[in-house]
Image 1 (cartoon, helix red, strand yellow):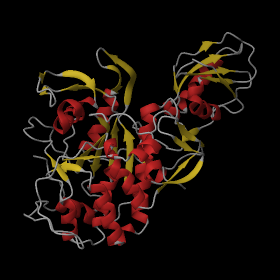
Image 2 (spheres, one colour; image 1 turned 45 degrees about the vertical axis):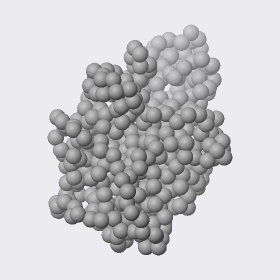
Image 3 (cartoon, one colour; image 1 turned 180 degrees about the vertical axis):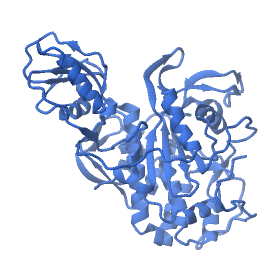
Length: 494
């Protein structure tokens, strides 16, 4: 059974019967139909919006009737040897492909062709602090290297021993229960509640709140999803918002870049819901929650009283109350036989991150920032090889050290360039990593951008005689501290 939320007051819920919402026909509540598998975990924010909206004084009967719309699943059945419970509440948010519920016209318009997969597309741990004043969201990349515990395959009925996979395969082999078991095994964080959603409700929810505003410093274009946004401020409706959060081919950041855009969108949605008056409009509240809950599956313990209790505790919740990060990656492209290329977590940093969740601690301390140029890709995401293009001894080491101190992932092994008479510092880059190259060039005043096809993900700086300094830069999604944490108000449009 899931561990109930821990707070100073008892969370034990009395027996209750679902009541029909006002203006809604009464119906007999049959056992919930197993819903098709939803999509990505961004709907955690809309689940949180139910919590926040409940604080507006909406009646228990209305919340109860909405509770009846949630399909139930038991992800904790027969689970043993689970991690010790910490403080606060941990929700595992899982999304899978639900495109079969999208109309043919929308599938064509938003590039949703192909058959839906039976695997999780996004996995997030959402930690609600014990004092209900903070939400910490940790994204777990779907390609993370994982070892599944021994289990029975839910499709074939075959018993499997423990074996390596990508994290998103846990759902395909063992559904919600194996997903929870795997995440708990990897993080040692006890999961209190499980919520599973699809992108149909995502589109409807965005439309119901009147769209969500995002800002981008550079144009965003992805031929796979059809996303095409010029630089600037945009209010995205449901379909375009779906393109924005699904896009993986904007630059070389791939899935990691997509997760950052998802986090940015989550923060923007929280800001929209908490500042637009939806909290004070019962009809809007009903429409938003119905749009969300119509496609949600959750554990049996996540119900009306839990939502109301959290709602009352989170009256002052705002974007500044939320913080977002991705589990630290120690090795990209970690090849596993029979599995393919995976992402291996940094064991030391990841353990510190999950320890903070277990101890109900903030993931970052937010202090004042120094003056820095805003760039579209964080220095921590850019790998650089430095070459000395002059005959000045030690210049390569000086440039490498200066870039590293600013946050760039240098090789720490500078070499001499083939040409030793370079006057203007050059940033050589594969055209696919042009946004990263522009961010690096911003840190090197006066440098020249030089596209080189086939160069790969590592950018090259050829230091010239004009080199003077490395300018401090930070991303528009300004990750702080060793975990690269951002607060919701830091990624909202200013």
